[in-house]
Length: 298
Image (cartoon, helix red, strand yellow):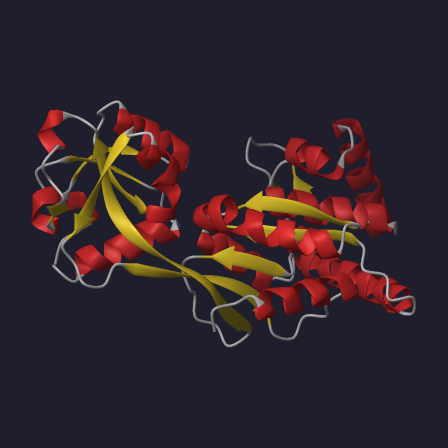
């Protein structure tokens, strides 16, 4: 069994795509396919179903995945122990983030860290909050940045920032003199909302729930994953949306959209750095964790 073949299998299982795995590992798709074929030959079984658009693991693949992750973690542990003899802070850090931390919090943090440790390379991936936690618990990744906590005794959350939810509207006469809105006011507006699994959406749904209102009660005109796309749609008067105040600083500066505050006394969100309490960390990952803890709000 070759470590490269095992890494390829785990990457495909994570990304659920041969092409995405090829891009992530900087390999060609034929090479990726060859790695999987060689691994399956070595194990004497089929690991991946290839007969549908959606990549899925066979029963053998599901069983082997946990061992494959452990194999790669042990490899990293061995290499890191050897590197630590020279106190070498280098290598690659994989970080996964939900939308707001990825775009408005993480850039400053990794830029600051990189000034002290310029030999560290970052791979940043975007998942929703629930997927981030899932991959940490399965051992696929070390760290995540999320806006939505999922309770689990194996996880440690460290608060790194706060933010408020606000309503955004097009900068047109209809909203010119409106500075606040109630949840009831939103029922008569066309609304653009984030995708399921988004921390922003989960937070907003909890606000609605306190008033016995469901997402289905709103006049939802669009479900959009990308924050920038949401802001552009609001700008062109498709509807209103509820977003993080951190995400609209540039648009407010240039008068492209209107910010409206919701009449609620508990709209502050907290963003967290999350990691597995017992997972082995390389010296580089440990140094990054120490850096985040030093710069946290806790």
